[in-house]
Length: 246
Image (cartoon, rainbow, N blue to C red):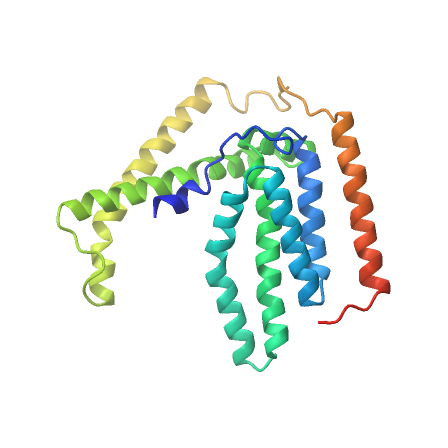
């Protein structure tokens, strides 16, 4: 299960897409997101998924995007089963499940290719309050770390004879106590270290602190934005004017 947590850890990759301004990547991700919501046919959602995978190949992140889609496949199957159970119809149920995968993959494009520092600068550029930015970026940084800690603690307890997969539901819940206690202790210790680091750097002393790095749009970013907006407008025109069979 370590590969699950590893999928949430940002890894710098030398690709043209990674070098784009985070606002450009955010725009592309939002366009894919909007196209996924507006799609009303299975073939349209399939084209969105194929386009996202093409961008993932260009960004050299196909394995990570594929891992995200694989993790979301279970939820997509649940959506398909629930809609089919309530009589929505086979085609519509499949459309909703594929749309969920398209939405997840479109948002993953931004988070997989954007570092937490770039995410912080983007949120500040959008005018999000500083405390909210700090809380969100800290969660993005520490959630995969906590997940890895949990898996390591589980492996350590299993090596000591703890059986997590055996017994009834109540017994399995009780067996999770040796996992949760050290995990909570590690989290408290880590939060204390983070608080000391923030205090030593005088966090909150200045209402509007300056930043060493500033976001700048290059010619390549502007060109990519223009092409993506033209593509988005063309897709909207097709959605409104052309009737696509399911």
